[in-house]
Amino acid sequence: MSGNRVYFPNLNAIRFLAALVVIIHHVEMTKHWFGLPNIYKNSFVGGVLGQVGIILFFVLSGFLITYLLLEEHKRSGTIAIKGFYMRRVLRIWPLYYLITILGLYILPNIPFFDTPGFTEFVNDDLAAKSALYLTFFSNIAYTIYEHVPYSAQTWSVGVEEQFYLIWPLLMLFAINRKKIMSMLLSLIGIYLAVKAVVVYQYAIDMNNIAAMKRWLYWNHFSIDCMAIGGIAAYLLFFKKERILKVLFNSYLQIALYGILTVVILRGWTVPWFNKEFYAIIFAVLILNLSANPKTILNLEYKPLNYLGKISYGLYMYHNIMIVLVMKLMIMSGLFNVGSLVGSVLLQVLTLVATIGVSAFSYEYFEKWFLRRKTKYTTVHSGQKEPEPQKKEATGRISIPVSPQTA
Image (cartoon, rainbow, N blue to C red; front, top):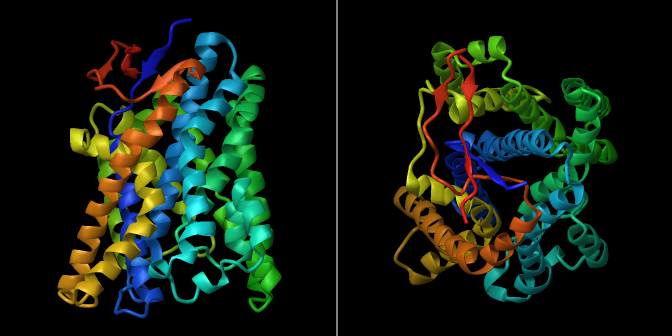
């Protein structure tokens, strides 16, 4: 069967925005670690901004992976499990291992990259940390041990890899039994039931370190957020018109963008279940941005598309670039990074530097592996300018699907 390409507009831009808010969050966090004036502890930047970016990544991953697996099964009658795993290996592993090796074994031995309160602990339990990081259980290492500077962000990649490990198997099982929505809702229900238990255990004794770590681990293992993205994909793939008509309403879009803006800027959170709150909002907005011809927000611009393509690099390299830029600014003696002007400049220069490194990595490192994904791919996603979205005569949503380019 010849391959086809499914294109969703705006998704690359969403990836970039998710990476951007994480970078902004981590700049202030790094200043806090180094004892510099910051707004990490007393503003939404340190409160919810970074969490919002990660949740957006999770929901987007669940949406896109679920939709593509549904499309693959529709076209081929099955899901090529080996092909799925090989695509994930070629996309995720090279950069993941590069950053992991740098964070665990190289940068801690370069004094310039010392991070006070963290670098001195990198070698503690190094064998155990290495075993967890190198097997994509970085989320467990993140929970148990002190953060590893420059590699700590890989915890979310570990969560996604664990999701990818089980997802094609669950999807194939559910599709063959025509129980897709039941599977998605059951997974969310089981996750929330376990979460309720660990929340209760921690809430009744917040001095209990074991209970606290169980809560941290399970709260970070946000597979329910990915399943919420999967529900959005299900609604779109099977054209659930009544539900989509409600979700595509312009007034609902305006209300959700307004709510999102207010709760982020105010730093408001839903106790214990904040990620699920954001995940539901993001799932609806992703549906509108990717498939609603009347979406009120359009992010489909070439610069944003490219920045979205390199967003994995933005996420993985940015912690290194924050410290590099910050220390060079301090060493120059020209800038006070604790001042308003210095803080803004640090954010801008960090972003520019991270984009530069990520673009170089994408073009001259990651692409070598990405080109090898083709032979394992049945349904291709992105990488092509979108065709106009149309509504069929029945009023159904039509997803742009174009022939695979060479």
